[in-house]
Image (cartoon, rainbow, N blue to C red; front, top):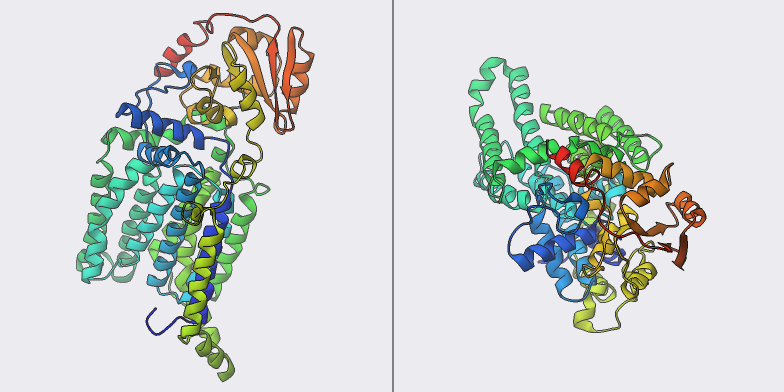
Length: 525
């Protein structure tokens, strides 16, 4: 803080403090996070990657590609401390680094600090529906922001630009082991290369491609280094092929985040707002729009329309694209204002030791108030009701640990990973979020039919030798009513979150071979 800190910088520091504090207090979600923790613990214990899902019997025999094994080990090591809040600390810290990288990339693109900070806020708001995703995707998002930061030096011949080109190799080496979203990095790099080709062709014709070979050559080197780095994983080229084919898996068609965009959805509203923002900014900006920017907007808008979960990768790119245009509008607006505006601006950007002291106080206060400070400053641990999300089946889990069920358990798929991790290997659920793409198509259809109490509920429960049904009250009202009316079943536990129903006379054995094993063989084909 040489010379002090300005008021604008203090506001920026306060914003990042709030960002960290908010994410550090976010409850741990009850869904696939716990499956990733379980995978990481299995990998750490066995010192190898699983070749099939070790927790879901109905997925036995289906090959497993651990696309996020390194992230899973990180989560497992965090859980190994015995304090589940350590996972929240890792999550909040990663989110903070991600947004700091985005801030820096916007500044390197030509935006001043206030405009860059506004871009970070807008990117956060556009991707709001993904902000609480505590899963390996958070590490992929951090790598994604790092790539945008590196690309902000593109087109120059400085030593820094050469360094940013070489840094693509280790970045993708880490990214391909952390999360399958490294494919989105290829998309960005491809848009950069092809966009530069378009720009040079439009500006100087085909001769421009020859005269500007340095820029285009550097683009290709980045792309080649990215591919080379991504091959440094336990699966080699197979991981790339698998990650490209994964979105087309038929079981994912029933998962909300893989649906096409609907304007009335949680993602539709921010997308519509981003389209309005883009139209206004490009209309008012006098800065030329490059081919790279056009391609990025077209490709990532199309991606969100096809799969709503792509909004997580769209939000940073759209602000990376618009940041220099917003800066152009702001600069021209201030240039036409009175001297009073300029005096206010100079005061807000003037460095002062007082603002430096305020900034230090903000950082310390954030640390002291956040859960991350408890191991150092002491204090009582938060109760489970605050650490875990409100829909986590804590009561159901306690009951099952005291009364282990026999046979297969029909449970909400979004609770499957949580229940599996807390089962102590004493019972198995039909499906987990992490195993959706591993289950045979017919098994997954039956899981959905049981979850919604479709016709033939009793027949399906008999087919899979299910003696225990767990119901999530919020999302499964039909099953809650149906299970109470089936003869031979009784509710043995119930709270405000869920209930447990069991058969009077248990069915023994394993699911029928023609349903489980036979379907799995079909999946291999």
